[in-house]
Amino acid sequence: MRGEERTEEERIRAREERERRRLARQGSQPLPSPSDVPAETIAQPIIQPPLLARARPHLHRPHVHRPHLHRPHLPRRTSRARTGFARAGALLALLLVLALLGGGGVLLIRHANRSAPPLAPKIVKVVIPEGYTVDQIAALAREDGLKGDYSKAVGHAAHRGALRPSAYGAPRATRSLEGFLFPASYELYEGTPAARLVAEQLAAFHRSFGGGEADRARKLGVSPYDLLIVASIVEREAGIAHDRPLVAAVVYNRLRLGMTLGIDATLRYALHDFAHPLTGAQLASSSPYNTRLRKGLPPTPISNPGTAAIEAAAHPAHVSYLYYVAGADGCGEQVFSTSYSEFERNAAAYREALRRNGGNVPTCKRK
Image 1 (tube, rainbow, N blue to C red):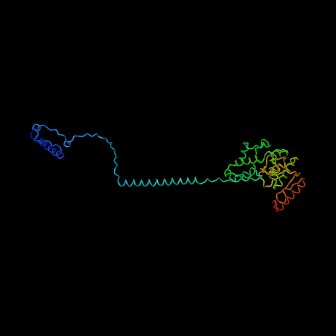
Image 2 (cartoon, rainbow, N blue to C red; image 1 turned 60 degrees about the vertical axis):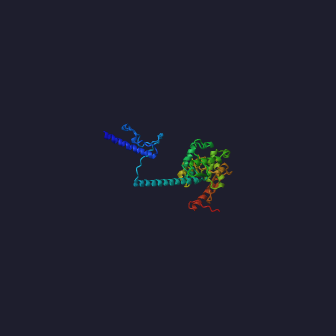
Image 3 (cartoon, rainbow, N blue to C red; image 1 turned 135 degrees about the vertical axis):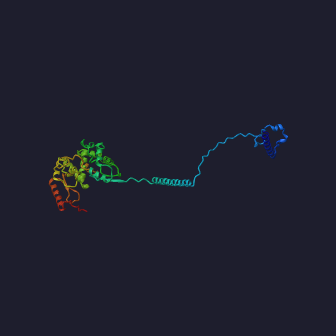
């Protein structure tokens, strides 16, 4: 046991010697050597501070807590991974450039569309000649590009009372707007509904046929509707302006005397055929438009007359003519007569002119 104590003692002394030397180097008071320490003290265990403790008093410094920033561990990329990321980044950049270019193109197109003035709609001029019927105007409306069925539009206008023929003296059951569709030139946008043309024609009729014509009808002893029917006949029968008031005079004279009008144009209207010769069966038909057999005016106008024909019907010539027939020279005028015998001579001359010309109307040779 003494051997163990000496060994421990030696170990302590060696440690004290090292500490003393260290303190000497630092300028501190050296520890007493073992020879200066009483034997009983040496025999007791000596408790020394740790070898690394300093001789100076320890200054306590408060601990400052610094938050620990956890950085996730990133695995080291291999060269292949770096290459893949690089390619993905290049592809993404390319897509971004393409998107920007596409967006710029769209903006340029929109800007161009905004800056370009809109195309003006095409305007068509619908020219309706005087004396045309509803069917003939319907064909013109189709040719000029109007939308819808013109004839049906006329029927709808009559049904909803856009114009009431009875207001002009027609029978209450009359629904036909023939005669009221004023012929003129109408400028409409291409594709305009045919109903718009009908509305404009009726409005034009209201402006052209008013109180003056109604007053003239009363003086002539007829209704305004009858005057309109006479004007429609004048429009069909008179080829030149000079003949209009004369044809109107013949119509009124025959009505006053109770004679049939004997005008083939009224029957042609019912047959929808103004070109081909009438057959014997047609001339013998019981149609209310057959004025060879039935007295009085036809039930409705047979055309849509213009201003000149309406004026002639309102102001007929003061003559006693009862007959007329087309002139033999083919220049378009009518040859008027008072007696039937004179009419027969004029009609024979016309038939001979047709025979000499191969059945056709002679060509006018006037300059």
